[in-house]
Image (cartoon, rainbow, N blue to C red; front, side, top):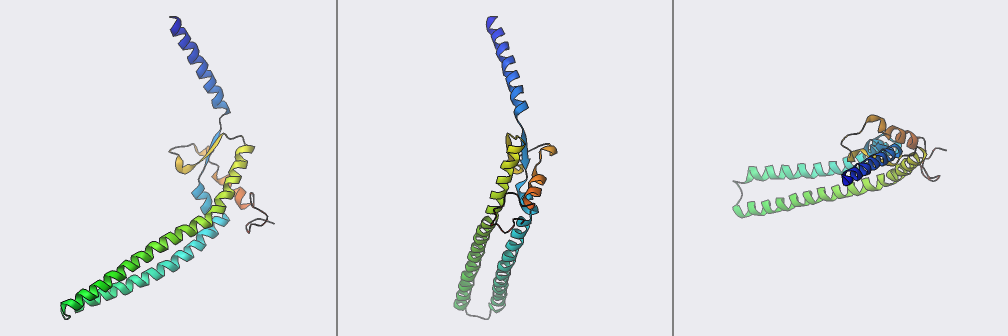
Length: 180
């Protein structure tokens, strides 16, 4: 009986401590992807990346179209050409196809690298702003929305982050997006 009463006292103490902790705990979240897409610098970075992507895609499309045309030409002439010449042309086309695939992979890596380069400073600045929001409004934790399954909408700080970013907060004086 004495053990049971100690258990209940301990349980009551833990519950009261956890409720006191919960009152001091303030949680918020931001949608970093949305913030990136809606900040002025994020839009500029995305537009620049789209230009690079479109240029590389055009180059790939041209290579693929030329390859497709040559494959179709070989298919039309297949019965007219000697078998050894058909095999030789098939080998050449196979090599060209591999080169196109390598070009595609190289472009993907290049684009990924350029995206990381273009967004790193933006995310760094956003993180500074988030730290300021957390400090000034006594947040215990601010997480990225991508890590959440559910959160009440009033905990979303994304619009505040975007507003502060676009107003120039967190920008170095040498940064091009800083308001002067």
